[in-house]
Length: 159
Image (tube, rainbow, N blue to C red; front, side):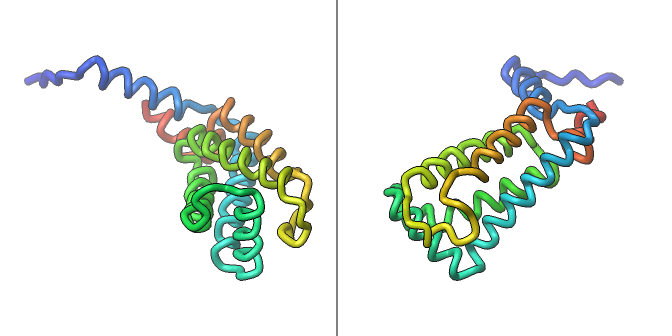
């Protein structure tokens, strides 16, 4: 007995989009870059939440850069960094993780360029060196996909 399964055109299109987002190859260079930026982003989110000195610096950066919704962003961004870091480390929807990273690091670059108080950057230079490096690395992951050791690669093989 055969089963007939109806799929709407939108369902097929969405499935094709998800396939393209997760498409990747067994590329160890991309895999290493993805894991490294994931660890960096995960650790910055965790440190903002757990290290009082960094929490205070983070709060000061938001205020000095006039980022709206200070109280919301004070909590939201560290959790978003943790989730993005986990996405990148696992390689699950790596392109989506690198896109989120791009937006976070664009704002981080803005903060570095507008805040001129060195005490608000305790572990990094005032120049936006790290945000720009992460944008470049994230663009590489966005272009190539999750690479080796990624959940995306495992799903691509099962298609």
